Amino acid sequence: MKKYGVNELRRMFLEFFESKGHLAMKSFSLVPHNDNSLLLINSGMAPLKPYFTGQEIPPRRRVTTCQKCIRTGDIENVGKTARHGTFFEMLGNFSFGDYFKDEAIHWSWEFLTETVGLDPDRLYPSIYQDDDEAFNIWNKEIGIAPERIFRFGKEDNFWEHGAGPCGPCSEIYYDRGEKYGCGKPGCTVGCDCDRYMEVWNNVFSQFNNDGHGNYTDLIQKNIDTGMGLERLACVMQGVDNLFLVDTIQNIMKHISQITGVEYGKNEKSDVSLRVITDHIRSTTFMIGDGVLPSNEGKGYVLRRLLRRAARHGRLLGYNEPFLYKVCDTVIKENLTAYPELKEKQEFITKVIKVEEESFAKTIDQGFKMLNGIMDSEDVKVLSGEDAFKLNDTYGFPIDLTKEILSEKGIKVDVERFRELMKEQKKRSRDARKNAGADAWISDTTDLSDVANTEFVGYTDLKSTSKVLAIVKDGVRVDSIGEGENAIIVLDKTPFYGEGGGQVGDTGVMESGSFSADVDNTTKNPSGTIYL
Ligand code: SER
Image 1: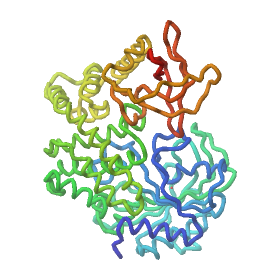
Image 2: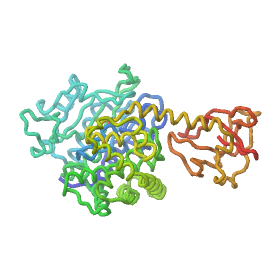
Image 3: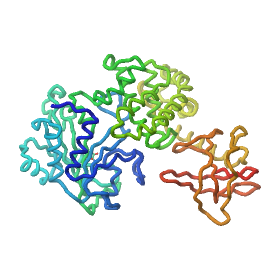
Image 4: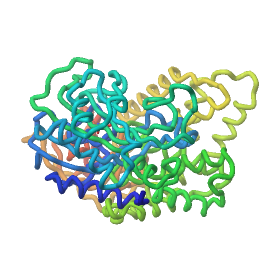
């Protein structure tokens, strides 16, 4: 078997499906477009949903992609095991009302056995329990013996992820050999152990789930396939786990070089190396797609990943910001498929560095507090107040606090924490509402280059405007993240600024995927309007 690299396998897959009449499209952004059901793109089909449902016309009815994906459901296990990761790339070929089961199954087999040359005797298909059509294709057309075809129920062989297109599926497992097995009697395809690894998923996407478990037929029958690129690389390179495949191993090596800690010497430091390796991949790509650290939504996921990685840097005994350096290797290893990362390199590095530096200022005090709690015999539950202090003063995202304390069996009063967060938000909203323009912008914020705002509200309720300045916590910034508060100055606006007893306008500001609630408006004596 030839040992193909990650970049080579990605190219081979896309070229194979191009040769079958597919249009190879670039990976879509990790940030979903017009899809409130997802925080981040989590599968190859997710950005293509409107093509499956027939809502939008695809550029071609056969499409192939290698899609950046993030899944954080298992984040606590990332690092602890070698098989969990938050970032992965998913290879996929899609048919929107074009070919169906027959071609999909034939091509998956052809790619695995001929193009990359996997041993057919090590491959086992599974099908949805009563899908005799798929059974017959595997058995009669491909020639797989009936006892090698496994029938599984809805839990294993019906693919759906919340709301949207879904359907029964047929997967392909690769037998990695006895040494990966659990050795238990009955260990076979479908066993939880590491021996039989699912590499390919052919989903026969023919239903739509409304998100509440109600299924309706889609207007067309589709194919949605998915194969984890890193998984395929593990198989092809004969390595145990995703952290050992070529490009990812190079990222880990860079971390080892900086921290002086080698992989494979000690289980505890291996956990930290895996956490950092995985999280620097996800965060580099997230920032590349425009996500910024914040306390809510995607920004919170990003902050949590970066701070979790920073903590593991400390656990390796490395006390300086360093993640921003490792992102160079992530970019370098992924350049062929994602050349745009190069253009954004400086920006990505800056965002990571600022976040690391800001956490570095408080991380030691936060650890002191947490260690005190963990050393005390009496604490079984951390109070909401302490969790709030760790978050607000020391920058420990609640989930990080929970994770660290769970290592000692200590729980956190999350409900009280959430109440305190809500109260804090209300306090800051009220403070802004009740204060005049002076309290909005401090004396030290230099807005001398900003022209006075043209007020167009006497004739218009909407306007297309240019952002002249963004001020956050008294400082001029270039951008803000999801869930963050800031003051925005525009060249013109229909929002009336509070003054002389009148009330400031409220409303919405939008641009592309950006949207902000304007909860008050004020103006300074010279006529600059602050939103
Ligand atoms: N949607 C399926 C999956 O994610 C196949 O692409 O496995």
